Amino acid sequence: MKALEGVRILDFTHVQSGPTCTQLLGFFGADVIKVERPGVGDATRKQLVDVEGADSLYFTMLNHNKRSLTLNTKNETGKEVLERLIGECDVMVENFAPGALDRMGFTWERIQELNPRMVLASIKGFGPGPYAECKVYENVAQCAGGAASTTGFLDGPPVVTGAQIGDSGTGLHLALGIVTALYQREKSGKGQMVSAAMQDGVLNLTRVKLRDQQRLAAGPLTEYSQYGEGIPFGDSTPRAGNDSGGGQPGRILKCKGWEQDNNAYTYFITQAAVWKNICDVIGKPEWKEDEEFATPVARLPKLNQIFGTIEEWTMTKTKFEVMDICNPLNIPVGPILSMKEISEEPSLRDTGTIVEVDHPERGKYLTVGCPIKLSDSPVDVERSPLLGEHTQEVLQDVLGYSSSEIEKIVASGAV
Ligand code: CAO
Image 1 (tube, rainbow, N blue to C red):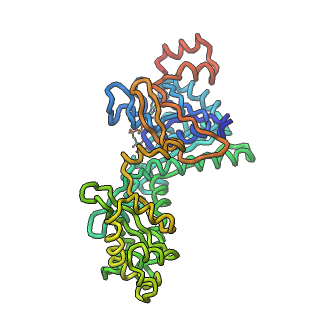
Image 2 (image 1 turned 180 degrees about the vertical axis):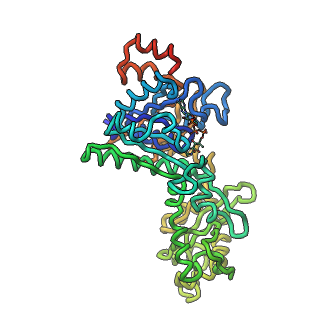
Image 3 (image 1 turned 180 degrees about the horizontal axis):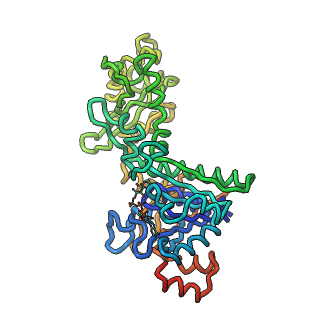
C-alpha cells in the first residue's frame, strides 16, 4: 500500500518544473500518465544527449514512476481521448506556456464540465500581473524571484545557484498544493485549481532576504561580513557571499589540500552555545573569557579576524577531519561535497536517496530517489517510460477502448 495509491494523475508536464512534481506523486504511489506529443515527446528526451539514440538523463531523472501515452491533443480524435482521460483522472498537472491549455480547448470551465472532482494544477513563470504571459525557465525565475540579487559576493555580479529552486522548487510547491486540494476534496467533493508561479516559489525560498530588506530600515545588518569590514549598506539586501543567512555567523573555510582540490573546504558555524568549544578546538582558549570575543554581539564586528583564525586551524585538517572533530563537540560544520563524492556516498545509497536504475536504452545510471521518506509508503524507483510505451495499455485498461476502437484511434493519427 502506497500513500497515493488510487490517485490517477493526468501528467501534461514537460521540461523540469512540472515533471518534478508528478514524479514525486508517482514515488508516493499515484498512477501518473504522462501525455506526450506523438513522435516528439517531452523536449528533454533529446536534450543534453550523452548516449546516442537513448533518452537523456535530463528526461530519465525527472520521469520515473510514470506511464507514457502519446496523444495529439490538437487532433479531433485525440481531443476525444483526452476528454475521456479527464473523466478518469483525479488530477491534471500542466506547465505549458500561458494560455496553451485554453488554446487546446481545455479551459477550466470545460474541465469542470468533464469532471467536477478534477484538481487542475498549473505552473507558470509569473502569477497574474505584467509578466503573466511570459515563458520562463529556471534562471529567469531565480533572477525575478529575488534569489540572484542576493547571491554571490558584494563586489561581483548577481549569481544563480545550481540548486534548481525555480523549476524543482516550484514543482515541490505544486505537489503540496495538489495533495492539499485532494484532502479538501474529501470533504467538499469538488476539485479546484492549484497554481504555483515560479517567481513566487523562488521568493518563498528566498524569504530570509525579504526579512533582511525590512531589517535594513533599523540599521546595518550586523551579521553580514560587510558590517565588520566597514562597508556601508545600500537600500536593498546585499549579496552576502558565504555568510550564514541566520543569527549564527558561518563561513566557508579552506581545509587541508585546498590548493589542489577545489572542494577541500568546510562550512563552519560559530554557534554561540558552543563558543567555548570552538575556542578550545582552534587553540584560542583565552577568547572564552575575553570580553572582546566572549559574546555574540562583541564578535560581530570581528568576524573576519575570527574566521581567519578558525581557517588557520581548518587548513591543518581535511574537511572530513574537521567534521569528525567538531561534531562530537556540537559545533555545526559541513564538508563541501562534490557531486562525485555524493554519487559515491554509501549512506545515500542505503537510504534510497541515490538510486541506481537500469534503462533498456542506456543501461545503468544514477538518480535521486525520493527525498521525503514516509514510514508506511515505501518508494520503489521505476525507470522512466519510453515514448508511448503505455499508449495501448492506457487506452485499453484505463479508458476501456476495444481493440477495434484502438485501431481507429491509431489510424486517425491521434496517438
Ligand atoms: N499535442 C498537441 N499539441 C501539444 C501537445 C500534445 N500532446 N503538448 C503540447 N502541445 C502544444 C501546446 O499546446 C503548445 O501549442 P500552442 O503554442 O499552439 O498553444 C505547444 O505545444 C508548445 O507548448 P509550450 O509553449 O508550453 O512549449 P515551449 O517549448 O514553447 O515553451 C516553456 C516551454 C517551458 C518556456 C513554457 O512551457 C513555459 O513557460 N511554461 C511555464 C513555466 C515553466 O514551467 N517553466 C519551466 C520549464 S523547466 O525549465
